Amino acid sequence: MDFTPLSLTPVHVPVLIDPDPVHHLTLTDPAELVLTDLSHGPQVTVHAYDSPEATIQLMIRAGVRLAFVTTHEQWMIGMVSAADLQGERAVQMAQLRGVSASELYIQDLMEPVDVWQALDYEVMHRSLIGHVVASLQHYGRRHLIVTEQRDGCSILRGILSASRIERACGIAIATSARAHRFADSEAEPATT
Image (cartoon, rainbow, N blue to C red; front, side, top):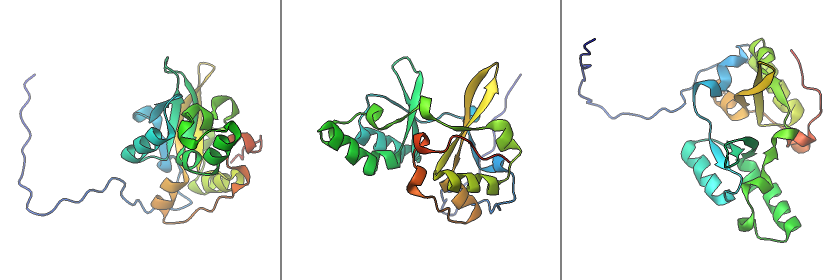
């Protein structure tokens, strides 16, 4: 098969960067439209022994507020948010350990996999953006993890982010601090 080169045209006006165009979605649109589907692209991962400072810099460069934590063997063992790294949790953990915040590792601040609560992909697939907003508010979260069942295993499928919904729908989502971490969340997820 022969391939021919594509035609290029000169650029005569300034080019704007638009990394996340406004979609003008509504709460009655399908939830899948705001899912960051990890089956179609890489997720940001950090190592358990990385420093919070290096992780924050990586998140800024990648334009994310959530990273997954791995071991040397690339097993996913947790996740960490920018709020975990820069907020009250880091200060409390440093005080508890009797060290400065710069001496902490990501594993000290991460949310371990064994305390995660996730939304099933099939439930999310049948839901509307409004259901996701209600769930974020109910659980006091800024992110919801979405998993999919395959061959008896839970596979990390995606993330639903309050920030992405706010941009797409032009709304503000107020979440309470009462259940900031998965471990503090109620055991039963909201269903649609």
